[in-house]
Length: 205
Image (cartoon, rainbow, N blue to C red; front, top):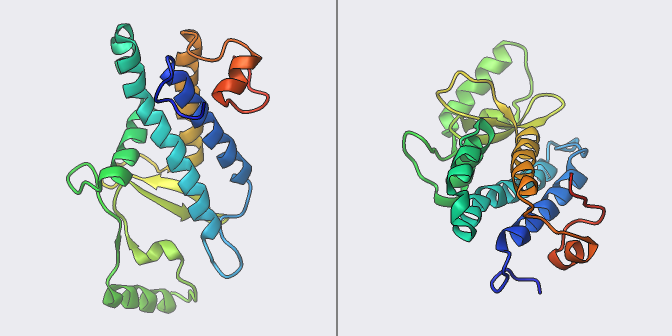
């Protein structure tokens, strides 16, 4: 069975899906984010996989609460963490495109503004404009920044430093993983690991 629709243990299935997305993301994580022509195709692919993991992490909250009412208070405490609050902000932005005090859309700069920035850069002796300079910094914004580039999450209006996207993903997975394993909401044996599609070599920590 590849669908959780009829499963008696839906959270175990969703967590397995989360770990499969994480495994795919890790396989891409050491690749350069752009090539010599500044084609950011790999950066987009890595961010897509990261958003898939974060989407699963955020969905786990509802799946945990609704599958076992006794977990409601514990789940609320779990999702009060800084990592999982940031996770929800990012997921809500990509899901709803809410434009308010909390969630913003990414907006490209107007052509005239780009030209002004370019002229200023040339006065300073710079000859290249990096792709991130063509965007108005809004938030949460995921950008490939720095040299060599890293995927960072920027939160507009906050003094906190940007979050490394891959570190955020790993942090969210670690927190939820510790929660579900402490409550034995994971496969009990190798047969269940295979049945629920957990990655090869997975073992309860």
